[in-house]
Every structure is written in structure tokens, then in C-alpha cells.
Length: 91
Image (cartoon, rainbow, N blue to C red):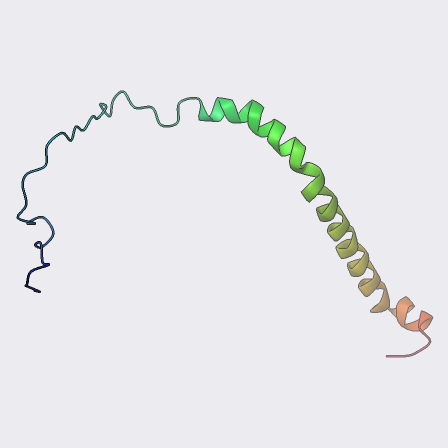
């Protein structure tokens, strides 16, 4: 442990005068309601918030899904017998 002129003490044992004027208030854990009205508030406010943000995630998601469906359909066709014949080749 360090010592010397600037050392004021270890944590919890600073050696200075006791602190005065510090008040601490708590509330009974039975009276605290952390999630009071959280679900009811989300039904209305959350829906409104989600509807306002929908264009920013729904349109790109729909575009991505349509590309995914198109690519799978095209890949299935090109790997089929008709696709091979259409491309002008055998296997």
C-alpha cells in the first residue's frame, strides 16, 4: 500500500471526518411497480411507433423476399430438365 504525504487512506478507511448531511430514501419493494402499465401502454403507443417505422423496414424486407423467391424459382428451373434444354445443353 502506498504511503506518504498525499495518501489519504484505503477505500472505506479514508481516515477523514465522518460525512454529514447525506440522506438516503427508499421505497418499499411492495410499493414499487416497475412494469405497471407497460404492456397496456405498448398496445397503443408501441403499435403507433411500429406503424410509423414500417415503411423503413417493411419495403426493404418485401423487396429482399421477392428477390429470394425469384432466385429460388429461377435456380429450380435452370437445374431442371426443361431448364437444361432451354439453355441449349445437356448436363
